[in-house]
Length: 88
Image (cartoon, rainbow, N blue to C red; front, side, top):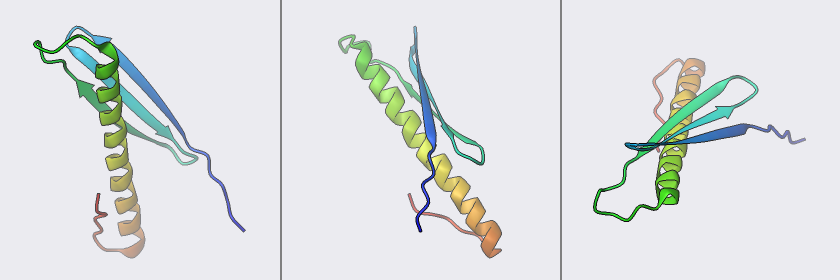
């Protein structure tokens, strides 16, 4: 028998004078994991706000994945009673 768990990710993107920031929050049945990302436009590049949003969001989601792997490593280490490092 299989079980389905539904996790939700909220991704907020903030535009400001210095660039774009993003904050990703994964909500599971057991808690939350967060990731952050930033993007800044080179002054010589064209101003295309969507690109900054995409870069900041991608970096926040990547950071969220890294944090989730760290959490899983700690959980495995606690069960196995030894250090564990999952490859990225």
